[in-house]
Length: 355
Image (cartoon, rainbow, N blue to C red; front, side):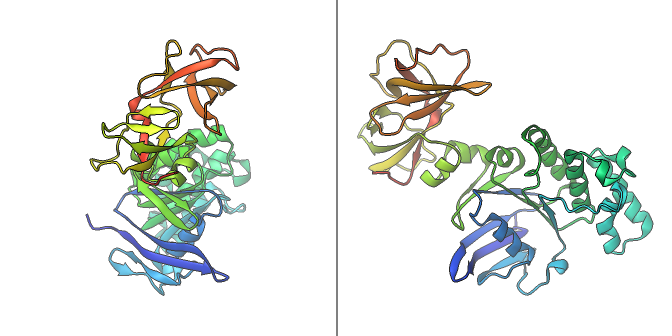
């Protein structure tokens, strides 16, 4: 399928310092892409370049086969939704959602029909004439989304749209957000620093670091096979080991042998890195550390985190290994020996070596 949006080797500097470095990606019609990364990595700057609010130093941004260079932001017909929502306090819910259609000078009956359609989509049809000041944070977020979708944008860009909401509300709305975007069929780019949001909303996730895209993949592929240590660490995988490939295909690490779950059919290099997923372990019976995929050490710390206990295991490594176990898993006393078995799907090879 021909991409709808194609970003080709975009570069942007500020004060002679590179900020967006050789970024390329494409989007198919109806696809939801998430730009995921820490604050300052360039996510919002990249969004502003696509919107036309900033001009790249070099590279091209094409939409539907047309180069957007020099095209004013309002002529691109892209939608923008920000964290602050920027709703009009003097207008009620209906008037806020209708605003974009009115700017397009659509006939009044078309504006009314589209506004009612969007309010029904976000579940606010009963709130049409309520004041903005009377809405909760989640309701305001839905109004802002409906207003962004009402003019039928060719591309919708959402910059941390859930960032100002409390955690419980974010978790509730994030699945609703994907449902709404898919129901409309809009092509969208979603910016966030929260990996749970990215995984719940996106068809594809682009992890950004220092102005570059480190990896683009579907959420499950990204989680199972991070491309490098930078991506792995951002996803919260602290258990990174230097490894060497043995003739029998096992990986030798400072704490033992591991069977590797490869991302492709390509052979492993001689030296590489392993990531041990924190959720892919179970308590092994006894303290026999022999055999592959076993970790033996001392239980250094245990932190209750609701559905799981986060345990820290001290081994011969300088840093403890961190894993999540069910709260009913039998644990020894702090300071006691412990043996864990790592499931094969929880061991992934990274192409860069830590040696």
